[in-house]
Length: 293
Image (cartoon, rainbow, N blue to C red; front, side, top):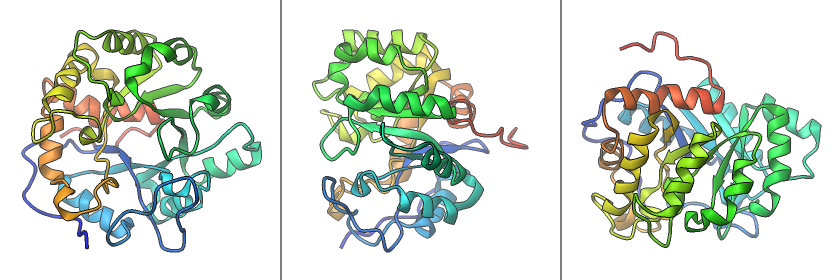
């Protein structure tokens, strides 16, 4: 039985007030996994109460809940979780070219501010629907969360450059073939960032690192390169509840993982950008009142 650790030693990294976790999933009872996606996470259902404990532990004030692949194109669990979390939460849902204007409005009223593309096994909407989803997102002022094997980014660069919506390249780019700061794929990422609509997300480092923890040196080298190049274009997420972990031995220490990943930022100014100001811009969040600390 997997048990998530929801408290422990304080972070070495002090998160600024208003910090946003931009990558996590949440589940409530009554919403079973659907065909085409993975099952629900192992262990007790990672619900709002569990996540609030994690927020208190790490010092997170706001959250972006991303539609989990288990629910494919049915956003009802996400809508219910947004209602349970209240104003500290916004959502990234799943839509496609057939989603009606009425449904878009309903999803927006529920607190959704973005749409998800995941072109990997189990994903609900892949890159073949990128432009259709972008059209609908742009009409709403939403952002896109785009996830695919970044090793192939050169094949998709022009399409990504043409997106009308603000968008984030998910999960450290998931360069499964392995890249270095000097790789052409990283140069392509920099060009997309320079276009003004692309952000880069630090989340789920363990999903693509070949060198592994605790320092994830391969992903860290690219992360530091992008952090030095464009700290104003990075956001961060816990990737809680770490859905790939099916056994206790595979479950990460969230405090250690957070300290490691945020340690790739060059200074406290970048930390505040990444945790507060950048997500406010990308996700259209209100400014955090009284956030100077």
